[in-house]
Image 1 (cartoon, rainbow, N blue to C red):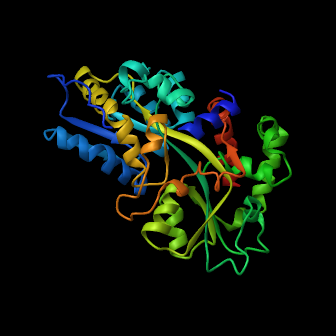
Image 2 (image 1 turned 90 degrees about the horizontal axis):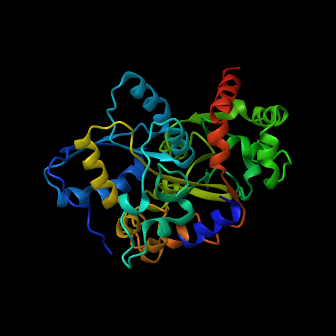
Length: 368
């Protein structure tokens, strides 16, 4: 998919009845997600209404999405798939699909149509980036900073993350190459449109790691999205990356002294995959829940609890006020024009092809 199509899909991004009941459905469902405010939004928007309609079902949460690829590989090798439905980023869905670890989906059969009858394949459109992927949200990885620790001039550029003189103190960065490598090259003078060409060379990788070397001894590395908001709340870091919805929760819901840095926020997609090889009764329950949880109203409802844009076009007009705070959610979305002046369009296809190699190089750099 081209950058133009992806950007257009983001910009355009009623309750639908759940799938018909099957008598042989399993009565237990293990969902895998990311924990924190995001998982709480899924609980409120998807799980609670589903359980209200299916009171005999038991849902178990596992917060291991950050390790989804490695764990599903291990489960497949052991012949013991214990997960039923897994929330992953788009690039991981591609890897799992390519490796035969995720089940291929037929959008128009497995996902609900829009309330006006528009097929799911048209309603999700270009965000159906993998044959195995059911998109939920558009989100971004961006930076928060302590408003009381940055002096009179808050950071306004992503490159302020690398400016230890103007903004002394610890930073928190996700313990993976994705985003960090792109930001490093951008702040080392590489034009946005050239980032992946440069990163695709050994010299480019070295250049990105050299830039990260300039702040390495001031970095706290995180693996769970809830870590940076907590580090900021505790004053242990002056700024840090995380998912925009986690920062919204810390700022709007908890009243923490945190500001948002939207410059070069990294757009990405999150959604569900169904592990390949589930027994038929578990698969039937998964598909029933999946059709319910990805319908137009459910995706719009999730935006009542967290500032992520719904992946369906038909959901966007239904996004309104925060369910508990009573504030308009639209201005807090990463796709809002006021927040999207200079964005990084994360290339999930490139990372799907290069992730394992770059992961190895990044981990070796971390160990030095």
